[in-house]
Image 1: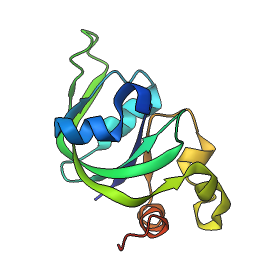
Image 2: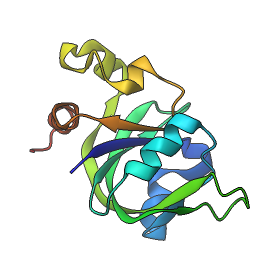
Image 3: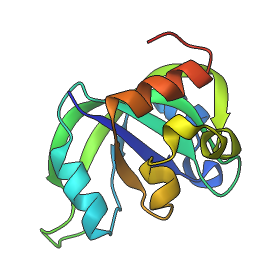
Image 4: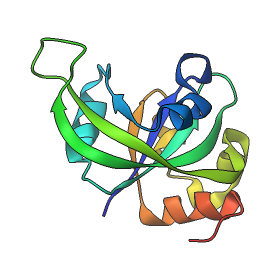
Length: 137
């Protein structure tokens, strides 16, 4: 199993909208590194959902329900999408400030490669984020 983090601006597609929709095609990603990560996602992988630009916090956990396929928002075959389904809302959001302050997360991609919209997490990083949110592993 792999662990992931995706970013979405809450003014564009918030966790609350995602919950209401019940699932979503994660499309429109146009970054080569992010594409590699989308192609690596497997059905059942947990995905932390991060509100970027406004909020700056991890707010929920989704699961991959469909592995990579041709992104329906383009005819360019190089770009892919995955389908995600909300799994759990975190008990308490985990802010970027909290993440940066925790030495256990010093190497997390969210801090090192801040502009990347789809990124891997280690199991330890995932577990620390759960702990910081007040949830158990």
